Length: 371
Image 1: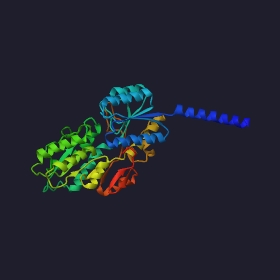
Image 2: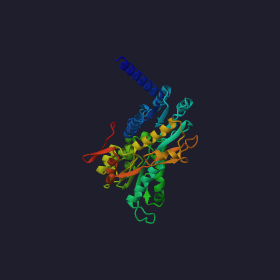
Image 3: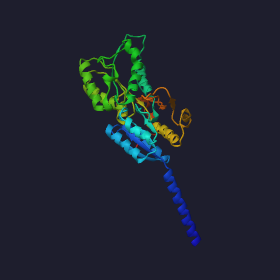
Image 4: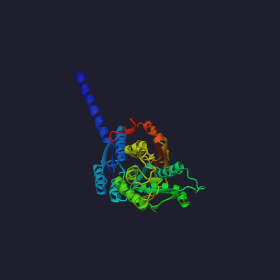
């Protein structure tokens, strides 16, 4: 009996030592998300936390309420806690230079998540979608849906643009992809912009605010469409702005037609608007896949590797390795770019097939706990 007790004590001690060793060796990942006020960031945070924890890492997840000072403080606290890797979706891509310099001094690698962080050499990699292609998809959707033909100027259409947050580096890519795709038709006079707002600065929406997009579109409709002028297309860079634009069209548009309204992200309210005919399409970016790519990249970095195009072989999602497109002011940031795709009313089942959405009567609901 004494031998059995002694053996059990030895086994218990060995197990305790193993657990202690594992705890000492376990790496911790700090994840800084910009806000809970937009549905997609709740999804991003949840997927990142879930996947890193499932892989055996400790996770510290913070949201900064769209407050730049708070995000700097939150990241500073993660650095002070000694995290081994930082994943940062910046509120303002220009505002984190000093804080991330502290991360570099502490030897903590940084992944810029979804939004490129500017003017700092502390960024190791960038994970996002092909942001320019998002805009291209929106522009090409307009061309295909209206049947635009540069050789046929017999019919013309009116279009207005709503772009994103000037503090978000991606916003310029979204707008640029759409505008560049449609510019030949604008130059040919097939697409007209009655408001004359043709630059990103003229149509930008700080903080991607639904309320600001609503107010801006109401002003545009009152100034240029109150006499019955037809609006054919409202090209919105994302879903939160599309919500405001669709609301303005419902309440303030004098025309009898339903304009095409574009979006991006696949937010639940917008998917419901697509079912109801208030929004025409959204460009969907599977943020679960984005989190998965970030996980594989993070694992390689934490293992002391220097990831490159070879990492693509370990990814379950379609992505490209880009070493040309994203210069943050200190040099090109190696980037892993996932592929977005178009969702319309006819292809909503595609989202259900991802396992991230489900039908609830006529509408889709998210299967994510945070939404």
